[in-house]
Length: 259
Ligand code: SF4
Ligand code: SF4
Image 1 (cartoon, rainbow, N blue to C red):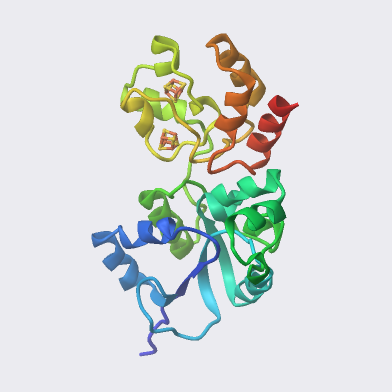
Image 2: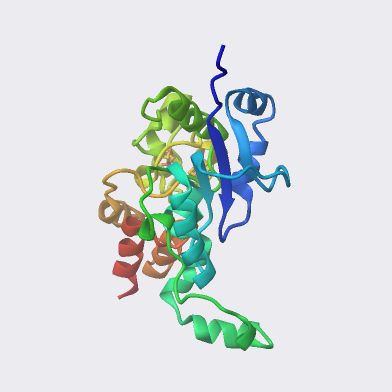
């Protein structure tokens, strides 16, 4: 009887901290089930053994920050049937996209003794700015259960079951009293995509938006509310310039308060 070939999984790193790849390794028990269902063909964080492509599913971590990145992502795309970007770097440019608001050459001259050795682009950009992406999984880092759902969705030919609603909904689901309403703590939850389980408000602190903007976020209204709480424009700029500073909705809102 002919044996069915397991789908080949590849995990690729671009400019990033490796935290999202670690989320996959952190799956521990579930990782064994994943390893049973797919052939882990290219995952340098886990093994030096590399199986040649093409790959059925590629998970891409990190943003494009160098000319080499910009070239390599096209080779990854060509080798991948289905390409999923994971984490804030890959989906929004990451914390390194803070450079996009400044002059990179000036940073280079201040930070490095020999800036001429550094070959970098003026901007950090998400993978979708360079190649077609089949699905984006948000978070800094991503939630491991959502990652497993994406892999499982791929294996079963269904749509990933990730929510488009805000962190506020998760707050209600776990019965957390709203820190913004009850304690006047500024919180980005209303404009941030769910996925973490509303961890921060459960510990009496505001959300700082690590899962990036939700679908159709009303950032203008939230900023107005933060204004009522006494938050200054400069602090609003800083709040929207976190891990997802270059995600369009957060970028535009931060720029609005910079004027
Ligand atoms: S604490 Fe934040 S995330 Fe939770 S309901 Fe209030 S505004 Fe929304
Ligand atoms: S910052 Fe917001 S999205 Fe990130 S873990 Fe905290 S509550 Fe969740």
